[in-house]
Length: 170
Image (cartoon, rainbow, N blue to C red; front, side, top):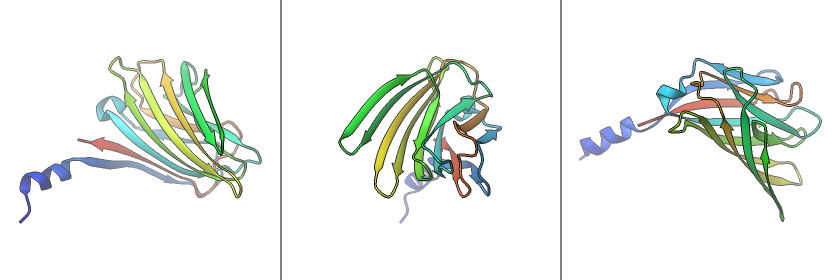
């Protein structure tokens, strides 16, 4: 016999998909409008993409068309190499030249109304693999209603790449 309290709790929890975009051409950025992070509280962002550019590329995250006031803490590991850095940028992910990567991000508002994005990226080519962690802080208290993921190189997000955004339900 099913437990109604347990069943209803599972129905109320989990994720609600808000956005799903699959690219049919190479693009420089993916833009999603109509979000409301203040009301939704947290987003799970999944990005499975291919770097279609001829060299390794960084990808930034921007909110509400604002490209300033970001800070990123980055950690990286590949083979026996590890590194970390504090960057005055909005670096969200990274991909090797003409290679695939998978990125998982969590976006939320802090108690003092700033936006914090934590992401991890898994990268690989035929001979190398790596993992990146990025913690992006947007020093602006505006409610993010627009999200852009932009490659530092033109047309560096390849055809077939997919972005999904889920609202965390509670």
